[in-house]
Length: 68
Image 1 (tube, rainbow, N blue to C red):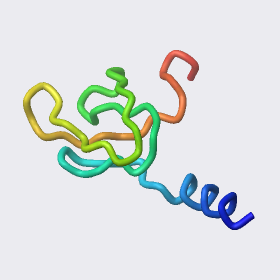
Image 2 (image 1 turned 90 degrees about the vertical axis):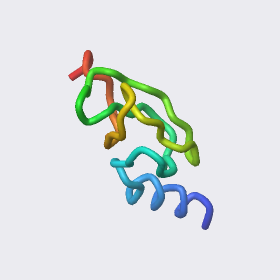
Image 3 (image 1 turned 180 degrees about the horizontal axis):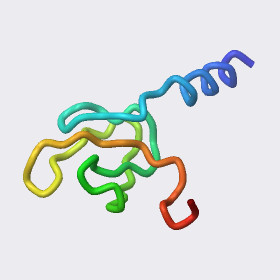
């Protein structure tokens, strides 16, 4: 039961923003702030890379843009 509560807390409190060089807080679809239509899959703990050769801010996408 404690594990389920922890997973729910982590899902709701996990950051939806990460920067190049930081660790991904939760698995899912992420896109660079400058190009929101470019979706990338990252797993929790993965280090965010640069995008198009420069540091960027990555934002978590909770649904694909086509379904909005």
